[in-house]
Amino acid sequence: MTEKTPIVTVTMNPAIDLTCSVPGFAAGTVNRVREHRMDPAGKGVNIAFLLRMFDLPVTVTGFLGTENSGIFERKFDALGITDRFIRVPGETRTGIKVLNADNGETTDINFPGLSPDAPHLEALFEEVRQLAVKDAIVVIGGSLPHGVSPEVVGRLIDIVRTQGARAVVDTSGPALKAAVESVPSLIKPNDDELADLVGRPMENLDDIVAEARRLHGEGIETVAVSLGARGALFLEGSDALMSSPPTIDPVSTVGAGDAMIGGLVAGMALGMPMEDRVRLATALSAATVAQSGPSLESLDMARALESQVVINTITL
Image (cartoon, rainbow, N blue to C red; front, side, top):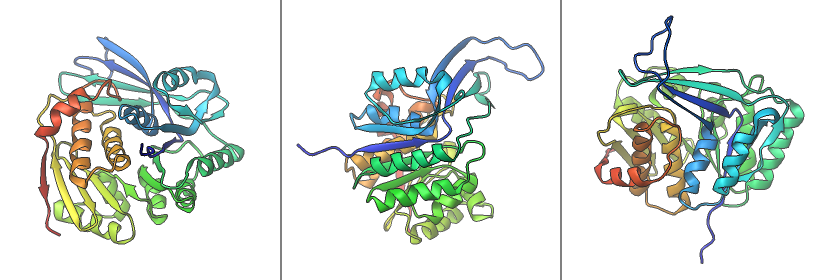
């Protein structure tokens, strides 16, 4: 029996998502919640939940507040996820997501996060060093806690590469710039994040393809650029694919990018060809948009949507 690829996700700034459905939401007035739910979340956490649906071995690390870690611990235990989070005094932040079904808009209200100190960071570096065994996939996702330098992302990638593992990064701003300089295996900016990274607007698809090619030429094996409802571009080796998602009734975009990364990583771990990885990632992202929470409860909808994903080859 072939040994399964170990996967590690690193979430330095996780959150507890309080998602509220508020029809006709308007600022400055009294709004009434129709439905609500609370979920342990954060990019790496969401990705870990999804990867367990593929029966892949997943370990999570990063920083969790000691005062409200229970909601995470219960979910990790229920899903069989190995918990190697560094505990930090205080509370993990809350993120309020207000969904307005009348217009499909989501309003985010994000509380400040934890502030890990130097010993906490050193503990994280050591955890990643131990977990990044040869040929493992290490996903570094999300924003950074207050006071943590973007260079921390670069150092984590350096550790992963030194250990012979593959680094996958989904972040933005200075953290993405630091990541690119350390040359991970895969990045997934959206078009705005790519424009911020290169310092100029992305006027059209040709611009996006050109920048993706440049980043690939600098050593990043796979460059994925999400384009929202238009789909996503995927460039790997001499191949460039454009995926268009199926038509769905959108409920919330929360977690859609995490689902796309999760699909790509699952495909990598399972040894799937590029086109199959792209199809799976696009379907998972679309299925997530069709629900209110950040994580899918099953793969059923995504599997049903896979056949509706349109993939076109882009000539380089």
